[in-house]
Length: 509
Image (cartoon, rainbow, N blue to C red; front, top):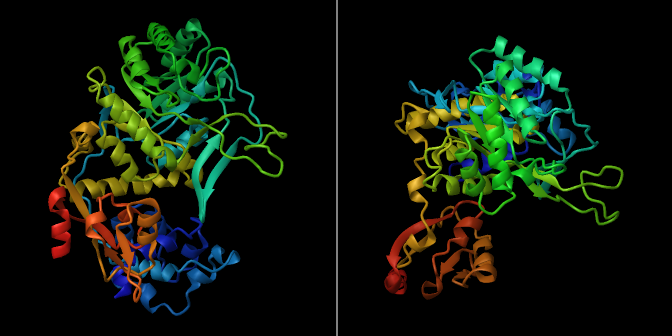
């Protein structure tokens, strides 16, 4: 009974313990040839149907006596091996979906993309070898690391992660600048990539120091064979001499530099927006009015990730010093989605193509950006953490989702979530959605009671004999803090009632 009730929770928790090794020893050790590493990785990236499809129906793990995969698991060097057999046995019960004829290709700024998944302008796409490997693995395009007329001199170290409890990597900060390769080297990389991969999409990200440089760089990237030019108006730590986010916060500069780029090219232009601003739509409109064909958003957020309370230095520490960096990773996804929705809600921008980024790790994250109006998405931090291989589950997971929901093309879901996001004054305030408690799932831990009492409306009591919650009808306001904090998903949305009927209905129940 417990295995059925808590399958998703137990599988997710155990998968999160996996190191996601490269050339994983567990797969090599399996006497049945089962690719345990790819199955676990599919679950980690929310591709549950893809995980089940990789498992034979007569699950060999159920009768395996040797447990060789666990014997070689590197996690045991820390504490105990991952329960690989239990993961695979449980995952075999997920729905096995064979994706139908689903078209992941999509047009962006008039250019055909084989799928919506691109590498964003960063270290993950900064030379020929890296991008070629990504293309071979299935990525549709790249926004090449920002190119200037100078090669940046980097500091060491320049990366740091934010952690919470057992989660090793919630957010990520970098103080990396634009490309450290020369302009000539970068031109050759783009030329060679376009020659060798003519169907892939090359976005050349550029950053000039004045109008003449913007025009000059645009002309060079066009001659090199780039498909699109992305104007980096948003790097959070390139503020000297009118660079980076200082430009993106100034609509006049955005407009003048966009016009300068248009002078140097006849290919589509993206204006990459900074989130270090209250209303992104203002510079975005300025860019479009000045000749930009699309918007890229969001870049990283200005941040200070931590302070060492022994030395009072910050991180990443460069000989005792640091500077404000750019914050990225899963934690910024809600902020990115908010900015994109705000732009798409403006009349001047509603039909402007948007390349979305900011916290995308899985196909599901990507689908959320697309549902808010993006035609493609860009990824960096997840690739830095897990490698280009995440593209496998992005493609497979997206195909499964579209198939099961009756869509033939990914273009069908572009913007579908926008009508559901309305101003707060348009939300219904006459009724309450009461919480619903699953007594079988409930463990009696009291987390909902603590949160409701100390952080809510004191609308729950805890049964003294079994620890399970008891709703106090006339105090519940339907905030659903209890739904949010329950560790086993035993609380869900229940019936919606008019506020004046709420106490009577609850008492009747």
